[in-house]
Image (cartoon, rainbow, N blue to C red; front, side):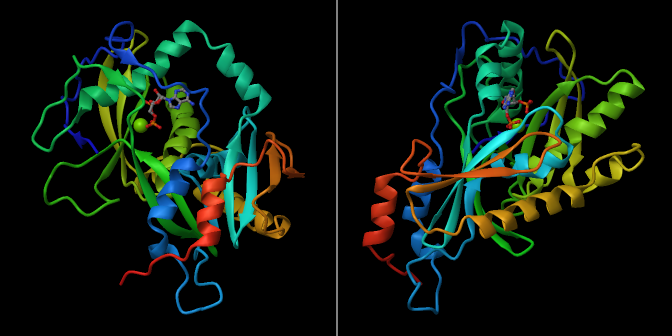
Length: 327
Ligand code: A3P
Ligand code: MG
């Protein structure tokens, strides 16, 4: 976990620096599905198991296991006009596991990215390198190599309506003040965005960017986003902090704007629908749920198919052994 080091108000960070010669890029064709979370679950099983009931004492006390990013897509779906998604769901020992399946359109987009787009994806990570130190008293090292294989992920257990969720998501950094509150209240999300020069740009920022930022941070309880506004050349010209709890007030004056309750209701209704349809408890059955903008969710059922995503090592460990209860 890295520590946030506050820069000047207009820091002039050059986000293009190092793209050609100090960048190790994660291979995003490798799909890890839920594997990291499943390993975490096995290692922490005793904390998650239902207590008090003998019959189900080895089952998890959780309705859904997934990545934070999948929940972000569910939260923003009511306002999404471009990109659809597909989610694979398996019910196993009473818990529903949700893992994303790449859509054809997303695969095509990824293959056809322009060089400019590839470089701009680097800018967000470069901003993190300018603003984060590896140690609590350290300084950022923007001259170092940037490696996007490295990340810190938090695991969160929370509720949305009557759904008990367990999900993991990347956290960019934390407040370095020793008196900062405990996690997740000390966590900080870092973002870059195009500088805002016109009222139209401000309105678009409120309507689209702040929706994404809110949806990403609200469920894990990350309380603030620190944003670097950059020009067309990738130079950060201004900084601003957005407390997540204030975002809904900021957007109130926008005509026809997004509403947090609409997002939460869609997500909660979707999860209720999944509980309703994914009834067969079987690690080799996948319910594939598909959604396209302005359409209803559809689903199909697949047995012993390439969509299966719960690995044998997880199924076997969960089936064969009891967790050792620690007090
Ligand atoms: P920005 O957040 O400044 O856009 P995250 O913000 O979720 O921590 O992600 C860090 C950075 O990864 C992003 O910085 C962006 O540069 C890159 N990134 C992540 N997802 C992306 C996507 N779907 N398309 C383009 N860039 C992405
Ligand atoms: Mg970020």
